[in-house]
Every structure is written in structure tokens, then in C-alpha cells.
Amino acid sequence: MTEGPRYRVAVIAGDGVGPEVIAAGRRVVEAAGARFGFAVEWTDLVVGGAAIDAFGVPIRAEDLETCRAVDAVFLGAIGGPKWDDPNAPVRPEQALFTLRGGLELFANLRPVRVEPSLVGTSPLRPSLLAGVDLLIVRELTGGLYFGRPSEERETPQGRVAVDTLWYTEGEIRRLVRLAFELARGRRRHLTSVDKANVLASSRLWRKVVEEEAADFPEVTWEHRLVDACAMMLIKRPASFDVIATENMFGDILSDEASVLAGSLGMLPSASLGTRRTDHGIHGLYEPIHGSAPHLAGQDRANPVATILSGAMMLRWSLGQPSASDAIERAVAEALEDGLRTVDLAAGAGEAAAGTKVVGTAEMAEAIVARLAASELAAVPGGSVR
Ligand code: IPM
Ligand code: MG
Image 1 (spheres, helix red, strand yellow):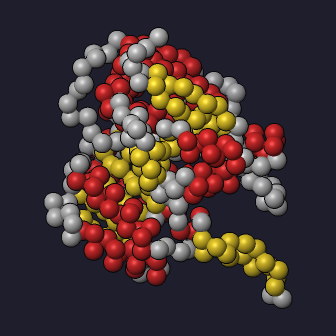
Image 2 (cartoon, protein in one colour; image 1 turned 90 degrees about the horizontal axis):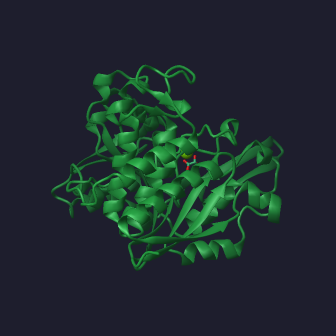
Image 3 (cartoon, rainbow, N blue to C red; image 1 turned 60 degrees about the vertical axis):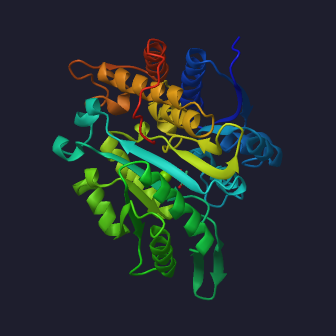
């Protein structure tokens, strides 16, 4: 149908609400393709809890290879109570770590913006939310998530469990450099977050930040301890631009930051690797939320985080920044027009004046309609997200 470029994307719908939000995300990316003249060839993969049921493993080697070979991976959510037994030999989340580690997706970008129309949705005072536009750059293939040993042992003193926090200088450096580069393209401020008053890995982190800062004289920067940062994210969220931090701190701070945006269902993410494709950087795109089993199969999940992850995919991996901007604008317009999934609705699903509560699919269709009506011209000044 289209003469334009064709991109190859592996799709992992996953568990819980994953299939519903991925269907919504795909629908919007397809609509962007029709509007902007490109096509996407989707390859569906069974990964996560679904793969444990089907194949006995969270991800098969051949599916990891498919993910490596395509231009990008689009993922819904993985995990659920069915596979949560702490004694189970395999866990769905292992698929995430196999993907992140196996594809060397070392940088996880989690942008946090507050749509003006959602200011009332956050429990925070509107005055605190004005101008919030921050980007968490989370290290994704090191730290406690990957350090070994990580196990429980029987000892004469009873059971003991150990996890290992380990970082090489090179792992820190590539993450910090990327964060400085991203800050240079934004408001030129970097906050490096650590726990250097306690952890040796954080003290090495600080040294590397100081060394790298010399190459970015135009970027102002600071070290901040993670506990103080958690407080400042609520007290003065607009003061942040780029936040660079290790794996677990980034996991925790990004859920905290989602409160600013009004719901966990609003935040997208990009996990970027080291490989360049013909069109951009190889990466994996997923909402920061989980599989939300309590909402699964009910057409109630907010698809915006996945749709915005699709926009990030178009920007970073597929070389379609105008289509990416157009999706972000269409999302903003749908919200401005009062469309709300239940997580964004006033008081447990009740529509506030001027808003309408819609399901997952209807939200996606509303965004598609606004995308189809959008101007084709690239809008200058779209920010790095
Ligand atoms: C995330 C998630 C995962 C993580 C879980 C599901 C293992 O919370 O992507 O933020 O901790 O990285
Ligand atoms: Mg998390």
C-alpha cells in the first residue's frame, strides 16, 4: 500500500493488560504509518507468563534472537499472580532481564511530563506541577538486578539471602555520557542520583560523573542522594531536567514520578541498546506499569503509556520524529477534550464535568481520530522524550 519505508518490530503483548494496551499501541502506530507513509511488519512473540505456560520458560532463545534482529521491540507487560510463587523455578520477569541484558539495553529513558489537562488528577497541588518536564535515565543492565550471587542459602544460623550490587566503571560511564548528551539537548541540567554516603558503587558512580562532566561544560549538574531526591521530586518537581541513576533507584523514583503525571498509566519508556539499525538505535519500548491483573480483560487499562512508548519507538528506533510528535499531540488533544480512562477519572470511575470515561479501545480510537486530523508538517521544537 505504502511506498515508504518498512520497519520490523517484534511484539510481546505479554500478560495481564499487556495484550489490550499493545493492541491500542499498535493501532496508533499503524495509523501514524498511514498518515506519514511508512509500514510496520509486526512479529508476535509469546514471552513472560504466557511463555512459561506454553513452553516452560519465560523466553525462548529463538525469540530473543528475533528481538535482536528486528529494528525494535514493543512490549506490553509481563507477570501476574499465577506465576508469583516465590519457590517457582522460573519467573516471568526473568524474560525482562534476559531481554535487557541479552540485547544490552543499558539505558532506560522514562520521560515524565504533566499534561496541563491532567493537573487536577494528581494528588499534588497544581502550583507544584507547573512546568514539570523531566527525564529519568535509568541504568538497566547492572546493579542489584544483575549482580551475582543472588540467592537464598541454608546456614547454621538459619536462612540467609544475598543480592550483589556491582558496577563496572564502563557500565556507569556509558549511561552517564548518554544522560549528559540528553541533558545538552534539553534544558541542560543533570541530577546524578546515588547513595554515596553508604555505598561504594555510588562513590565510583560519583567519580565517573565528575570525569564525564568535563566533556559537557554547557550542562550544569549536581549529585543528589536518593533519599533527598525522592523528597525533592514531590517538593519541587519542576526543578529537575535529566536524572541519571542506577537500576534500582531508577525503578523506584520513576514510579514515584508517575504521581506527578496523574497515573502510572501515563508513563512510557524506551530501553536503548548499543546497536545502530538502518533507521536509528535498536531498542525496546514498554509502559513503565506492570500487568495490572485486576484490570485485565475488561477494557479498562489506560493505553496512553503504551501509545507514548510507540511514539518513543518512532523517534528513537524508526527515524520518524514527525510521526512521534504527532502521536504525542494527539494524546494531549484527546485528554484536553476530556477523555479519561478509569485511572484518570475523578473518584473511582465517575466523570467530572467536561470529561468522559472511556475504555482502552475507545481511548485509542480517540487518539487515532486526532492523529488522522493532524497537520502533516513537522512542528519545530518537539522536545526529546
Ligand atoms: C519496571 C518494572 C520491572 C523492574 C519489574 C517488573 C521487574 O518494575 O520496568 O520498572 O523492576 O525493572
Ligand atoms: Mg518499576
